[in-house]
Length: 160
Image (cartoon, rainbow, N blue to C red; front, side):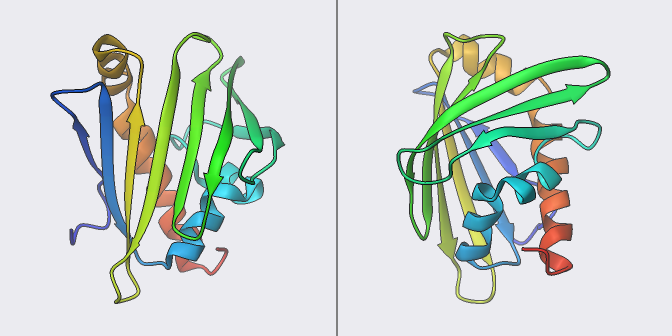
C-alpha cells in the first residue's frame, strides 16, 4: 500500500467485521506507543472537530480504559479493556456508552515492512451485521482518516 493518506476500510461479507489497513512511516514500537499512551491518543484519535479526553487509562494486558468526547456541548463516553498489549499487537474491547450492549473486539497488528514503514492491520468484530453497517455509515471513515493524518503529523514531528 503506497498511499499514506487514506486507510482502506472494508466490511467482511461473511462475518460482522470491519477491516482497516494503513501504512505509516513509523516503527511498530512507535505505533504501539501511539495507541497506548493516553497523552498521545488524545492528540490524534478521531475526527478533527472532536476533543477526546482520557478519563482513565491503564495500558497493559488486563488493563482498562475510558475516554470522553466533549464536543459541541455533548458528552459521549467510550470504554474498554486491554486484553493484550505486545510489541506488535493490541487486542482490546471497545464500547460506546450510548449503546452499552454493543461491545466490539478489536485486534490491531503492526507489520514491520522493513523500510521504515509499518502496516497497521485492524479488525473490529461487532455483534451483528446491522451494527457493523451502522458503524460504517456513521462517518467512521472520516474519523479514521483524520485521526491517522493527525498521527502522521505526530510521527513526522518526533512526538512519538
